[in-house]
Image (cartoon, rainbow, N blue to C red; front, top):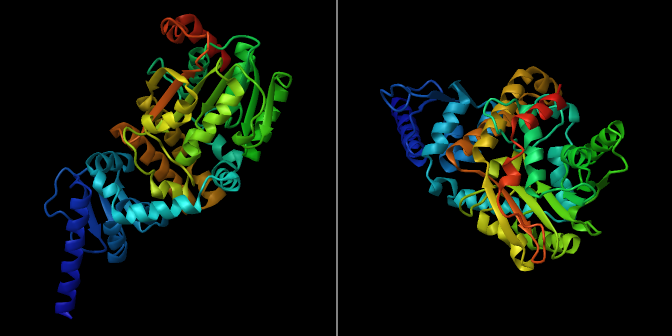
Length: 417
């Protein structure tokens, strides 16, 4: 018996050492079952990770990201200390070789096949995430249900102020004028389309395959008296038709998959031609690599975050000119901090709605996203582009930032009062 116990202890220590080295030896304490803490004599650790047993430990050693996500979701891992601080440290030390090991690559390829963004596959993937009850998202998003990166011209801005500022930032970037026709691909709950119509006088057609979101958007358009100016179409972006002055996509490119980028470029070109312009707003990376397999499994099926070079597969085939690129990485980290804070306040309600495993998975998704943007694993790009014959080419960037005056701040303060 003593020999067996000693042997099991040695295996656990070996697995702990392997895992610790694999994730870059962060300043974290690990306890497996009732064993002694690892590393020995660790001081000033940011958090203690309690693992229920050696099987969970083995899954972590094989694939740290997926193993941790599944075990945290199921309650087989508990954190003593701050989860966000733990993730900041671990994601900051974990080498890329660990994130792209053979098991992770194999699992990612299986997910890519299973969650392919075909017409039917995209509908299934979007339904999984966005057709959750609107009441769930109202618990932690802003009042307009904007589920994309906000823009904070003032670090002290509230989430509501920053989301209005983001919409203005987008509209100024494309120099939106009254009466212009805009097509939006992936419109969420309709906030940007309604803002473009209500505040800038544009005529907007907005496409989305989430029925839950489309119904909310149409109701808002009716309540705000904008039905004649905004049309919300329940359909896939691939079926967009008509001619427009501008194309806008905020937070949709991540859901397409790399194989569909040229197809999106075809859609953009047939809608705005060589004389139009547009904006792509999307989560990206500094270098090409697969998106988090655990996030794709539990939260965002079919998701992919491209590098800037990969994103150009949308624009280059049709000779679109890139006019401006901005990285709002830290703005997204701040946005997510607001979301997580509100989510934690609504924890008991989320558990009642969907159960504790769902609630823990979404907590980890939000906290992990904050850490990923903080340490630079994820970026948030906005690309402004124009056709080769477009005449709306600005001389400077003054039009983008001139709106951030005290007078405009008063306008969007009044808009949320």
